[in-house]
Picture 1: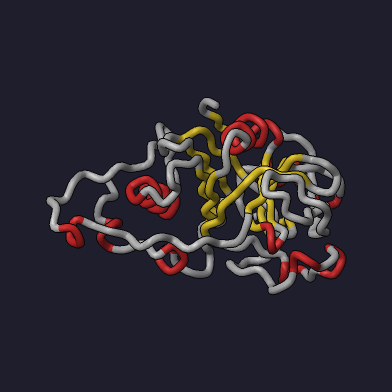
Picture 2 (picture 1 turned 45 degrees about the vertical axis):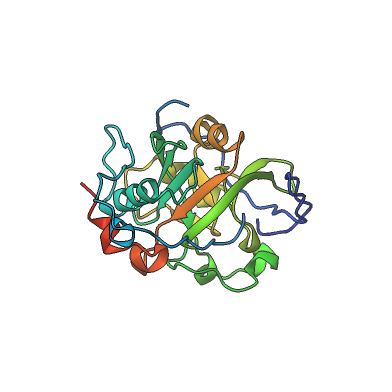
Length: 249
């Protein structure tokens, strides 16, 4: 829920949300081994800027997993430019309703279906993080796109969550089936993505994936969450340039 309470993190920020819905689900989870507001991306430097000969850029290691073209392009760009600054990172593919997690070296650590905001859109309504959940209209239930410095924290019920966009009360957490009418477990287990839009904006994950991948990656250190847009291009949101795109395979 988007209700603020005392935040228990190392930075001792005030507030937390009492928002979470769903129960543990472990099906359809592919695991390898084991906030924030959108942050600005540093300017990119290429071989043309420095006069150096072009070199083969590093890319994200997806293993045998086949992501969408947009997810691959973004993850390759993150690794090639070092935008994650040596930290673990997650790509949220809203169109594909999927979360893809990488370690600090850009190696895939797991991927899973996810439940996302009910409404289509890439922005949060101003001030939504301060409003009671009952006041949020269906068209306002969006998962914002962008780059977010993410960190572990707790909600008002004491449950650990990964803060994605703290100011707008968006987190990544275990799914809970507290409202049977929403059928969140069934939605996560289905093979389609059209029924994965149900949350108030938070990113709901199967408990096994959250504990075994997300929490394992982000508990030792903070990281970055990149949420791909659905109404704009990734280039508009993340500033991808043609010079960087040419390194993609």
